[in-house]
Length: 482
Ligand code: NAI
Ligand code: MG
Image (cartoon, rainbow, N blue to C red; front, side, top):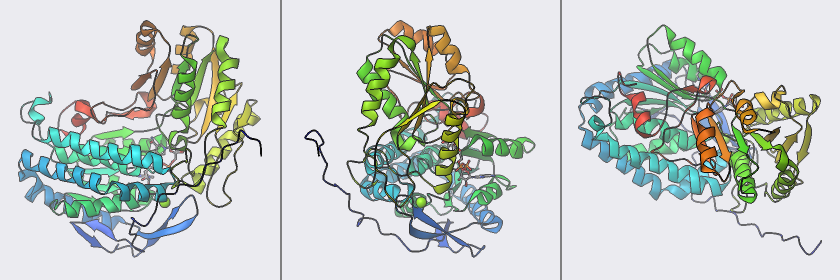
């Protein structure tokens, strides 16, 4: 072993704090009920393939029961609850999320495969922050700019993905409750466990029965919810493919939807950028959460004069990424969420090689069990390559180059998506110039992946409809607000 290799001792977070049930029912009308389908499925730990729990598969009848519970809770209780009382429940939920933060962080890492460093420092604190933020709005909605008597829709169907299970729950549930709606939530089938723990938080906060209902299951359960005749609004985060299905399902029913879909974000580095900082930002932009991020900076656009220097530094930084046990506090890159996602990443990466791009993966040893993919970059990528056009949703970066700032803008916007972009330059004027040209809902300058509940998030084109977070995000849950 050479003297410059410094091995870390393992630093695993204890999982003893998490008390998993072997089986879970559905959370309907404030109670745990068995599924009418009588079917269960497993949620596994993608880092080990260990079964964590058996979870209920909700069917049409289960969804119907949950929507009825949400309707009754809306009519009899929640629509009559004073805004400042609603605020108290949201504050309570936020405080409980903080009190049980460690438990949520460990459970999220177990069920999703993401590193504890991220669940502990990002997912869970940001989720609590969303409830605090929206608790503040609950009794001040007439000052939000949507009229002096803002009204909720009623019963909201919410479907969330597996990449940020608790955080996406918070982005959806907090504004819905703050504005006076009731909720039926369908978590993703590979990561239902933190939503089920959140149901316990609702009980602990003594939230009136039926205000939040959690129906677990797969895409069929999601479709049953979206197609239910008595919902007033849909909020969805996930693939553009399912987003389109939802859009057509609601089109002739006059129901509004918020859709948070895919992305192929450009991270643009100009030749005057602070290179070391930019390298860190590119790493964070694509390897945060294993690249399972809709706003990931998955296309690196480098100005030609700095390409060699930049790629050398980027590769040497990539070689230091620590891949492995998600519960180890030293881990940077955890497990790929599912076997299906891993095969999608592999298929797209293979297309990159077949179409003529050059691949390089960081040297690292991957565990034998579970689903893993090393930090990878493709150079020599052209705009026609699939890896430049399609969302890989994994730790894979496609590198393109440009000569002039105008060319960078054209390449960055040459995508069916429009969710995020990053600009790296020392010149403020260039930042403002570029930000005006880029068709992306969120643009970061000299930083990346910064989230705040007060800041609206959402996309252009096939990245979706509407915004989540901030004053703008409230509009999605207020009748008639735009
Ligand atoms: P997906 O869109 O199928 O799943 C997201 C949620 O929608 C899950 O809760 C799922 O059960 C539900 N769902 C599936 N089919 C449905 C239907 N017909 N009606 C209603 N709900 C339905 O995403 P999937 O298959 O897990 O991932 C595929 C790709 O989608 C990923 O590789 C990635 O590119 C993209 N994706 C983007 C996300 C984002 O944050 N924008 C999140 C997850 C995936
Ligand atoms: Mg799981």
